[in-house]
Length: 232
Image (cartoon, rainbow, N blue to C red; front, side, top):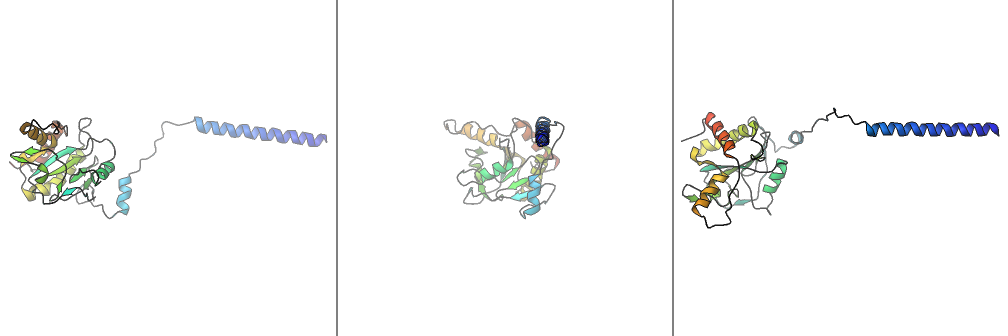
């Protein structure tokens, strides 16, 4: 009887000791959180490119096609180019999704992500809804004769990346050359909105448009000049 009692006590002590050790290990795992360990970021776009036939690389940067339903009937004259920024700090995929949403009647021709990836939403000859109240020269409704480029991000917060500018040059080169677009007709959304407001000061719906900054516009212009694409 005494032997069984001792064995029972010994077993109880072992169980208690095991429980203490286990709790100690769990506590260490919970409390020890190394701050110098960085997990690699997954390039989801790179993963998509491996499985999707919609991606191509005709130049230095990747291109994919996401057709937007937000186009108007008729053919764009392609006499100019309007530069925008999305003013959105998140993913370019979210912007593209919104611009392809038929319940959200806005769109553009291309979105250029910070890494230079281009999302082509419509061909240059399509009329997309990117300009709104607009005027350039003696013409209204810039959507009908100008294409829209959206740079992902907010240039009021951070400048365009070099990749964005280089990718924009890749995109614009064949369009400028094919349609002989003059330097005077490569403008910002703010410029065509200000021209409209100056000619129509009573239109209260045409509020001031803050878009790509003059500094970033000048960077794009300089890149176009270096690429010999500014035609005067």
